[in-house]
Amino acid sequence: MNLVDRAKNIIMSPKSEWEVIANEPADMGAILTGYVIPLALLPAVASFIGYGFIGFGFMSGITVGIAYAVVSLLSSLIGVLALTFVINLLAPSFASEKDQGRAMQLVAYTYTPMWIGGLLNVLPVIGWLGGLFGLYGIYLMYLGFPHTMKTPQDKVVVYMIIAIIVLAIVYFVVAGILMSIVFGILGVGLFGAMGG
Image (cartoon, rainbow, N blue to C red; front, side, top):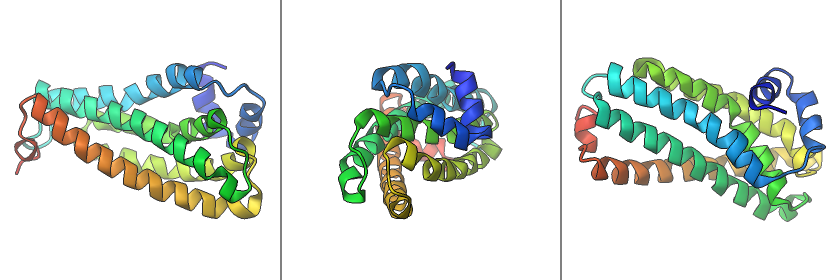
């Protein structure tokens, strides 16, 4: 299935799409290169345009746009890989099947609404609204656990809560570290870029 159809179907008809996904091979490389990277590029490009050309307060300029784009892309990729690893690692604790490829399917398709919402970064003043799209990903994850990890229904909620806590921790730590590194390499003062 092509990327556009998969993204549309996982958002519009997730219950039936998870059934389709469960019957597909779980090739991590194909998911990463054919789905994760192209979709993760959407908010990265939107951030580049938004912060590079439109700006928000003092946060503007090509260098700031590049910095936000790089941080967006790398934090997405690292987040997907870290959460995949954690979900797979925790699988036996929740009577689930341990399968790195299936964990990657779960995480990659759960991120879909967040990446699409990230297109709002093209207008930095409303970019934060794109993060709210990610809340729909919680529902997608809930539906996906039984299909990908074969998680019993009575264990899904706790498994999902732990995964979300890990995701939040990983995201904020990774994003903070990446912002410091990327802004430093590009010679952009982080606090100056934030208007402080």
